[in-house]
Image (cartoon, rainbow over all chains, first blue to last red; front, side, top):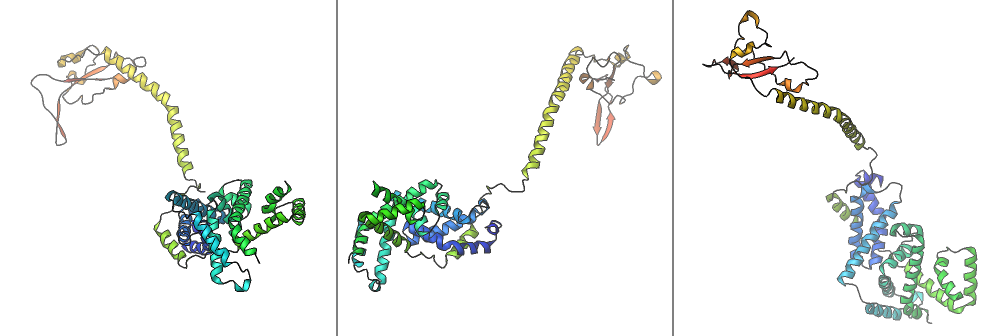
Length: 187
Length: 208
């Protein structure tokens, strides 16, 4: 990052290559939208480049990067809420129902690729129904694997709040997935 | 109550952030409570599903697109203080100049004030101008010029108005010399004296 701050384009390209997967994964999972995630990931790195001289040396780069990504994802969620372009809970229930039927037979060998994809889609949509502030903490913890301390820094909230948000998000997610989990557990 | 406590600890237990005592307590409770065991299984299955979601891979051209856009944008202004603080000497110089100016101001102000006061007083005292013929120059206070001749035209070129600026308390003006100046016409850089038919002149006062 120090080299990026000195306008080293090759260093910046290397930095993008190294972190693009994690940023893309974070914003795509938070938004449950791959195309939008691609745009946001691009915007994240452009902002890193624009504000490269404001990066505080000594602080962890990934934390700074995730802070930018989380903020842009939050902005996008709020923009969608304003435009009322969010998918409905009914649509989620339909998908969960379909996925549960597909998973009626939990035998690993018979699980087709399509079934897995449907399950993943259902999971993605279930995550997307969790309120924004809980969702970000959940994705940062359970998908991107950040520590509680890192999440606290990224979101700018105390560690205790991070814990409670993650717990609540997990609880919400579990309740949403109960139909799917019950079907999956049936003989 | 015990079940509620156990459910609250599920997250910490999953993240391995419980104390030894909490962990043992949760495990003992799960072993004895079927309901909480089922609840915990659903909890862990949910997190396993979340964790098993495939990584969303970025598009292959993301790096190129980012670089292309980055080349077109200007960097944001530097908000982090730079190490070479060039503003310090500039600011220090400006501050010193200001302080020096402020310190010198009273002294300059007193002198200017004194000059203004003196000038007002002198001008007021000498207001009745004595414009008149050349003969007036033989006033008692006027020393006779060399050869006894009246001052030649053009000799009294210099007229000083500085008298008014000198305080009376320091200088005695009783010996002031007054010159009557002949009109001088400047043509192409040369001064030519044009004698008027009658004596005309302007008064100037030089004080020493």
